[in-house]
Amino acid sequence: MKLKTFILLALGVLSTTWAQNPKWKDKIKTMKIAYITEHLELTPQQAEKFWPIYNKHDERIFELRHKEMRGIKMKFNKPIDEISESEAQAMLDEFIDLENELLNEHKQMNADLKKILSAKKILLLKKVEDDFNRELLRKIGKRRGGPH
Image 1 (tube, rainbow, N blue to C red):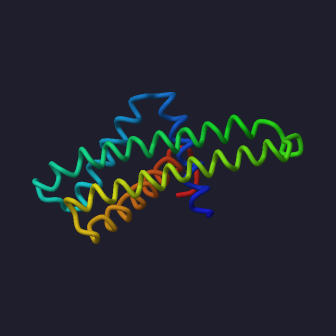
Image 2 (cartoon, one colour):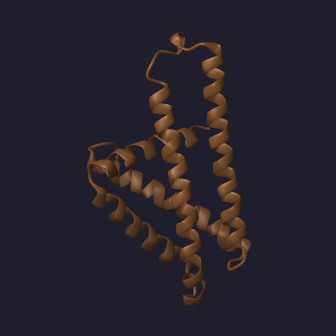
């Protein structure tokens, strides 16, 4: 749960960074492609089929997470004491719906990738993505003067 919260906060930081400087999104995407390509060791034939599938799902997942972050920011503007129980329930339902959409997108991505990659390779992809995100956050932290 802590990791999920951390990732959501990190996405919020990245979204803000991208909004301030659209070139960052392209730069980070290029870095991510290079990182995944290097660590996943795809054959040229696999890469040709992999990247269109991956990019489609990755973009959709980013959109859903961004939508979730915007929802959190907008809805948590007022103190929790000022939110009625029915408002709180509506917010929870909305977040659960978004989480379900994310889960469904991940399931579809896995199903699409299984047509070209082994389950081990897909699992490795998840690890490589997590490693990339951790490395990216470390670099951003360094740049902003945070812990090294």
